[in-house]
Image (cartoon, rainbow, N blue to C red):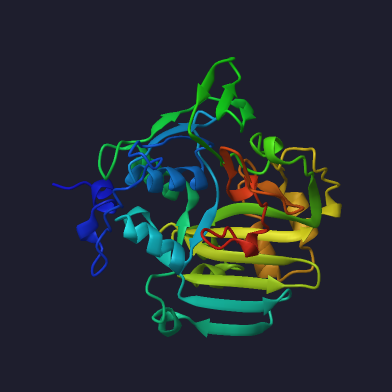
Length: 349
């Protein structure tokens, strides 16, 4: 019997879209596969590892965390992103993704502005628009990058391996324990506080003027509350409540069992400093104060957020820099920090 995970990476599981075999000329020009070191094993690093593995290269992933408690809210898989995953034989439906079939927009106090059924419009695209839990996407990508199935040699993943220095000229990375490893190419996929970036440019992060609360609430919790029950009726729906300088975004995820929230507001209300950790703990009272003028039923639902998982996400930006230097290339937030609405492959709005 084929396991659900095996089905996720099985080419035959994508009706009409067979997994595409990689090219066979991935090399340094002399027929030798490249040794590629990827700093960071997040969504971007793992995705790069899959593509490189499939094209015959030898990949080493260095991740500073232990990957023991991967968290994160839901993210969108746009049609072009799903096209790449399907090309590799990965179906997001296999790990809990749901389609985004409806958009609802309201004023902050609940007056309806827009209600659009996207099911017909979505048929224009070659691939579906999905919403998926980040932790589930990460797990599937990690299996595709490092597991025994699929094309090429599995990537070698080293957790608890913090990179403290990168030498772009000779292609080396130095770990916190003092060990040094070399590669033909280095990819810096180590996020917004990138160590690899400092090798290319010393550009500083800056405020965008916005921050976002992030949390999830079960649909059942909404359905069991008299005041917010109608908000628990949404399925496969992206909802937004709009005010002049802030907004609440809510959409269903995890097989329509959870409601994911991104609540964007002026960061001055928290006096958050760029030098502080990018994501920090928050409180229910902070959340409700920031959105005190919003629809009462929405506030009642937001009050059910789990305080232990409620976080404030600082939205940062940076001047445009070069993404390459000698043997080093940057990708993702290491190269270009984005606000949620600008992400294309995997928006987290």
